[in-house]
Length: 149
Image (cartoon, rainbow, N blue to C red; front, side, top):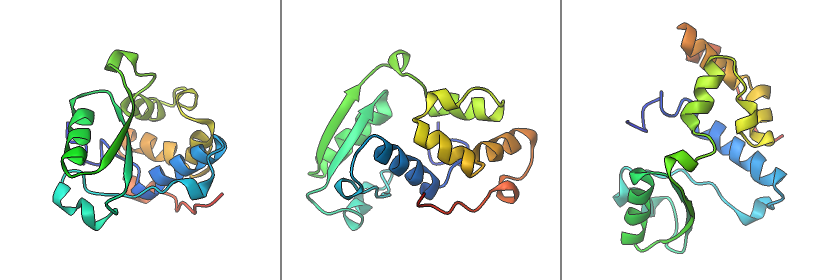
C-alpha cells in the first residue's frame, strides 16, 4: 500500500493535525508540551530541515512500516520513543476501518477520541469521504476547516 496516496491519507495534514491537537488537549496534555511537525519520512535525508537534532519522536508500531520508521530515525541519530508495539490483530481500530465506516455512514465515532470525532463532524470531513464513495469530487465537497476551537 502506498501511504502517500490520497486514498491512504484523504485528510490534509492540517486536518489530521487539528484532530490530534484537539485530542491531546481533551486528554489534558498542555499545548505547550508538544509540537506536531510534518516531515518527509519517505525522504529521510530531508528530515533535518524540518526538526532539530534533539527532537524525540513518538512512534507506535503495528507492522513493518512502523519498524522501518523507527529504524530510519534511529540511524539518523534521533531519539525514538516507541509507545507500543502491537500486532494488527491487537489494534483497536485502523484508519482504513474508520474511513470505510465514514464512507458507509457507519459508527466511526466510537473508534476515535471524542475530540477528533467532533472535529471531523463539525468540519464535515466524514461527508467528504462519503462523497468519494459516491463518486463526488472531494475537492468540491471539502469545507474550509478553521482550526482552533
